[in-house]
Every structure is written in C-alpha cells, then in structure tokens.
Amino acid sequence: MLFFIPYYFIATPSFSQNLAFEKLLESLYDESFPIVMPSQIAELSNYQVLDTREKSEFEVSHLPGAQWVGYDTFKLSSLSKLEKEMPILVYCTVGVRSEDIGKKLREAGFTRVYNLYGGIINWANAGKELEAKGQATERVHTYSMAWGIWLEQGEKVY
Image (cartoon, rainbow, N blue to C red; front, side, top):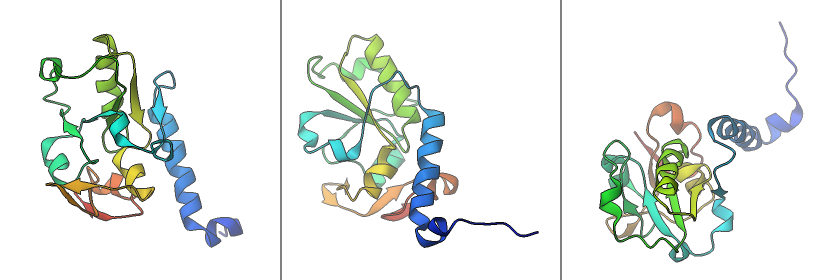
C-alpha cells in the first residue's frame, strides 16, 4: 500500500513536528486558563517563576531564577513570600502539571497566574536560556522518552 506524504512534511520535518506538538498541547490544556508563549517573555524578572516539576527534574535544569514548588509535594503554605500583585509564571515539562498548580494558586487568590505554553520543552525549543546550579546548561529533563520526542533543542535527560 502506498501513502502520499505532502512535500512540505518531507522538506520541513520540524514544521510537521511543531504542528503535532501544537495539536497535542491543544488537547491537554484548559482553554480558559491563561497561557504565555516563550516569545512573549522578554524579561523573566517580570514574573515570579514557579517550577512545578519534581525536584530531580528541576535539578537537571530550570528557567533562570525559578523557584521549585513541586507537584506531588506542592504546598500553598510554602509560598507565603509570593506577591499577590506580581504576575506568576508556572511551568513544567509541557504545561499540564503547571496548569493544575496554577489553578490552585488562582483559588488561593492569586489573580495573575499564567502557564508557560509548552513548558520547559517549548522554552528550550525557542532557544531560551536554562540553568542548573547557577550555570547555563543545554540539558532538559523531558519527564520520559515519550515526551522527549518533542525536544528539538538541547540534550534530553530522562
């Protein structure tokens, strides 16, 4: 059996992968929860950045200046120093766990909470800076090999 593959998928494989990643994210997100694209962020210092992944993922790399809050171990009580008026950017690997944590923050009275669209994978794919132990790094914990297929820029860590 022969299949027709449009030329643009052969000529630009990253385009087709990006399209598939976009469709995946569209199916995972609650469209009522606000997102921010990596390209919309000129200065991370405009946000209180919260990493909602597990500690081992955070230690591989994270967004510069991010505060680890975890997912399974997340506690609102550990965030007493957050400013309610300043925007909060939450992220995880692709944005599912961070959306859950973001909803908890909104329920707690934080009104300016945004989910990083595509999570750390999309951030890395956009060529944005990552750090580990205060040093720049190319390493990205992709949660699993299955999620790792979406990482196009950087070194995959599982």
